[in-house]
Image (cartoon, rainbow, N blue to C red; front, top):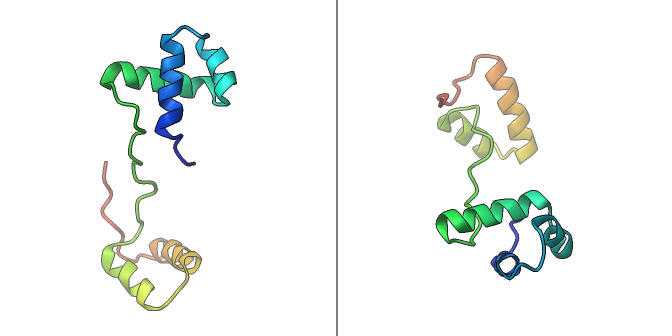
Amino acid sequence: MKAYPTDVRRQLVQAYQRRLGSQRALADAFGVSPSFVKKVLHRYRATAHLTPKPPNGGQKPRLDVTTQTMLQRLGLSRHQRRSASRWASSHGAPTAPQQC
């Protein structure tokens, strides 16, 4: 999901500071969820920033870099590489180190 623009966040904080409505009423007015309003206000109070947090990664690779490179060089599509990755990891191919 794409992050809401900083303009929307700024308008939301300004509206809340002007007491134009409750968090729930502002969520309805801006077309966002109440939890989004709560998170934006909390982040603004804690850091004075309105910019969204950076993305935090996603799913970790199952295979080590060498095996991933080999699959890419074979010219497989992304879906085919993912399927091959699942098959290889279940059949004892070198896997990426697990991070805790």
